[in-house]
Amino acid sequence: MIPASFDYVRAKSLRDALNAIGTDGTKVLAGGHSLIPMMRFRLAQPGRLLDIGQLAELKGIDLKGRGARIGAGTSYRELLDSPELAERYPLIAEATRGIGDVQVRNRGTIGGGLAHADPASDMPAVMLALGATFNLRSKGGKRSVAAADFFTGAFTTALASDELLIDIALPAPPKKAGMAYASFEQKASGYAIAAAAAVVTKSRKTITGVTLALTGVGDRAYLADASGAVGSHGDDAALEAAVANVTKGIDVNGDIHASVEYRSHLARVVARRAIALALSRAG
Image (cartoon, rainbow, N blue to C red):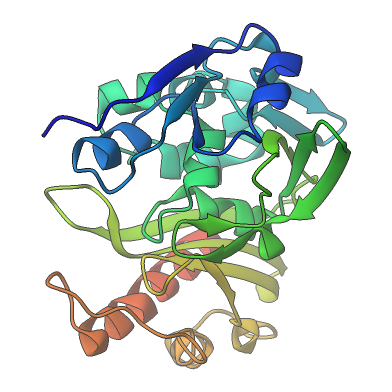
């Protein structure tokens, strides 16, 4: 299909972008691989596109101390091309390799995907598991929002209409943590029917901490309680108990790809797989 008519503006600087973003009917365009398909199906009909894809201020990966800063305009390809980022946060590379196809990874941006907040996208769960903080900016100032508070619903975030996501701040990962991403994908689209990101720490052979996030299950990515595995050696019984309630309190989606019951089952399967694999990688 052909999108409805719209005006197009390319921001020459971050100031340009912040001055234009609050205008009614304006949608931000970064890589475009989320917004443009919606426009073609007329699920989105913005009156004006504000292209921020060329802003150098929004690009780049900066490793500071044991943490990191990732510019919102950094492409998935740039994430994959950073060996330092892959070494420090292997979870990012593991999830990113499964995003879209080569064209999407070359043009799509991490900030665009996070701000779009598709309920089945991969990166929100990764950011939740890593404890990321999102730095936002408007003409009126700056603020920071924890990933756990950023995703508020399907295609809905804590971003105000006049704000841009500037960068993502990642804390230092726990020492010798193991990380893993497990996903059941819808073959045609590549989006997750259910997927899980896990960060696990252990002392000797005992699990000392588990952070688990799921996507594709409800109306947004969310943190799930897998603390039942803490104190165990990660045996089958402990992992089964730890993931038994990963959909508790969640309105699980049912659609043509998976019923509520089947998606709930898949959520437990991917959660267990992610935890077990992360445990095997923990130092």
